[in-house]
Image (cartoon, rainbow over all chains, first blue to last red; front, side, top):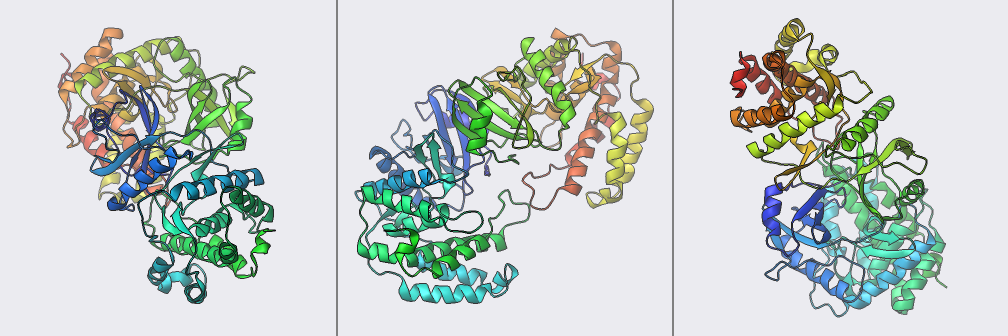
Length: 320
Length: 320
């Protein structure tokens, strides 16, 4: 739950005079997203999401994120569309923070994942990747292979507080990934954080993909590997091959995977697991007492990492 | 900010089959209210608030609260109206908690109080009191004079952690209030928690009063005293007589105050200050580490209490 910056009624009214959205009818802070302050904004014209970007999002990255959403929405992806103010600009300032209004998407994120969800996810993810190929901007993945060593160093001396021997296990995995990480796979825009709470469904339809604030330029197949981690494990830690198979099969309906990409899936999945393990570990060790956001369990991703370490062939993910 | 109970998409869909509200379009946990879990619910029929009652609200009190809102809304007060399910009942169960859907009210709560706000507040408060006179149910004020001693006892040994000498000061005030509390003033339904974040304005109009979960039967003038505390002090601690005067003058347009009620205002305001001082002190001393809700500063109410201790005549509140 996240409302870090309180917006006063007066500031909001003044802010909205910059837009053609009519008067404010209501504005409620919503418990969605952990990085930014999000408000559900109702005006005379409709319902929108107002986001104030907090310090974990770099101001210089915001033009990339907003332009990407606009590009993808124009290409037909169900994602938030930035609303332009009267002067044409979508990125503005409110209460001393960068801020933007985006369109509101219907639907609910699925709490219990079923294969019908991963099927729609696969299609949408491929659609995102294909549409992203014509996007002109580039953003390095700060949380890719190059960023893991620094994250690990920041946690190394205290990792044992979470689990004895964890630092050694992470160091060994990092060495392995650095030695075996693919050098050349098809690149493009990836979402990089496509967890179930960022995907809305309305009935059986995938009605929205949100939260593009980790999006970057990286191997497209790495985005699939993140989804295998985020969508295909059961709460008991078991891997659901049916969900993985529907994800991959439906992805391939819209974008074909090369032999290299398929072969790289196990190592990419290990990397994806390590990335979330490291960021969760960092947050676990560093969250301030009394923080609004409860840190997520890093060990969930240690179990996932170990699962992927045991995979030798991509067919074990349910690929034909 | 408060979403203590997560409602799954499946549970919500099943829950809504009990109503005539059509399908769910979206449902967002909102950062409003600290006692319960609140969702902004959009269905094919419109926008509503879905509340799951958490453990600080006694289940046996819910029929009183819901019936009261319905009674007041029918009398024309801008307050949430409980939505009845197909079987006629508004109070239901969801995710193992008592739950209800109420109508959505437009408007924003004012962050910077001006006399125009306290003017509308006075009218609405009198309207609430008058409408409440025909409400049949009764609920004792658990946080009235009779409840303060127990709250004090629960904080007494640790009050010095917040301020040296605080326990002695509270004990003396409690004795004074027990000796001088009015015995017979006009009674009725009071809101008992009418802070600015519970009152919405749409332009200059007071568009909603929410959060009736402390409402009870008590001296009507005590509700005014709570509002004097909550609306008429500046952030620097000074008392704004203009706001108090507009509040009282507009209240009296709709309900006249007896000489006894006017004379009792200073002691009632002391009681109101002590009530919020004690509950804030309790929460301050007992909030769990990592709680979602940041406890409010109890000492704000110590300063208010001391102000009221210096008042000898109600005219000092700006009364003619």
